[in-house]
Image 1 (tube, rainbow, N blue to C red):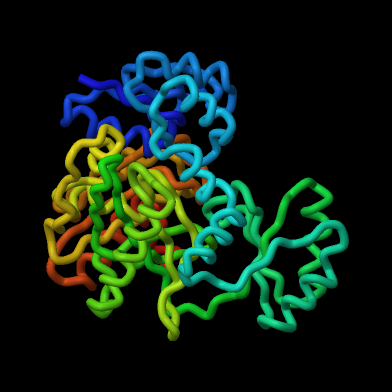
Image 2: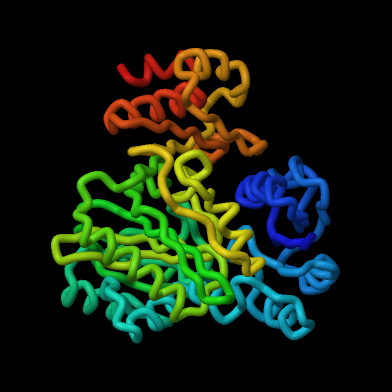
Length: 386
């Protein structure tokens, strides 16, 4: 049976292990320490630095394919792995579009994919450029670090020219910046697709993602009230992007739904938070699908298992002792599924998620929210609600 190596020891690798067990595939993980989320659950763990070429080359020996838990492995290192004969999926050429937002914007715009108005921020003295961009596209502006950033990190909102001066400080700290128009969107959606080396594609239902403070707190599948033609358009768009960029594995396309149609916000080429609902909510979970694609196996069915599935992220609260709260959550709703990541609980950090399924969307959302809130706050959630 094949060995798949996954660089990065976070919760995505941890949940991929569950799918690997069912398939009989061996998963090897390169983790920073034995305390990493995946290292607590995977037997074949190599401890090392996934940004260090020597560690990556040693890790990849004996792997039939290498994939990634995150986008932060340096592109030149992935190219060296490829040159040594290791199949990397996605490859360095595709992954560059998830690693660098400016590269992504330029390529998608060249393909005619709808995106917000954008421009690289020149250095030094970006203030005049940003003021001109604001006059053309309106305030506020969205400043983004071209590389890195997630869960609200690496993004700054500038409401006026004075606030845009944050670019001076950021550039002085060595941060390369991109500016985008602030899109007045109705809501945020996500299109999750998979593509194999053979060229087969598969698309999951379009979901709505709910963000609070830059962090995704809830995912609703399918996106309620989304017209069928727009859902099909979003799926086709994501499949086209996967094909044009040569993605192998999963591709999550984060979208803005606006009055004028869909705009692409971000790309991720790995299992994604917007797809955690698929563990219980689809015939083939995103983690199994990713392994199938990486190994060039036929892709699995994306058919939903229920009319509605809602995933709510569990964030760390003031009290890190989550396990005692299982009793209430499981007794209150035996149908809710709890997934914890084996991560240290810190306020606001994603430490797990819960999933609820059913026919009544309002009821399913309430069940998922109640479980996630209770796991975070315990009985104190009543005081917070008041």
